[in-house]
Length: 42
Image (cartoon, rainbow, N blue to C red; front, side, top):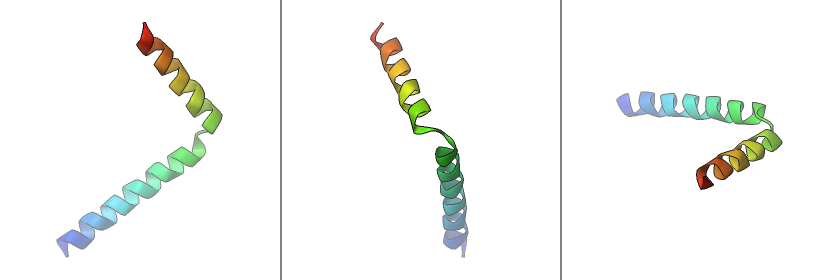
């Protein structure tokens, strides 16, 4: 019972993360990644 409940919580969190990722534009994501990489090189 406990395992099933924690698994349900994990699935809820994953679906929430997936929803957020879908909301984020991939171009914005890559631009942000490039910005972070450039700032790391300094």
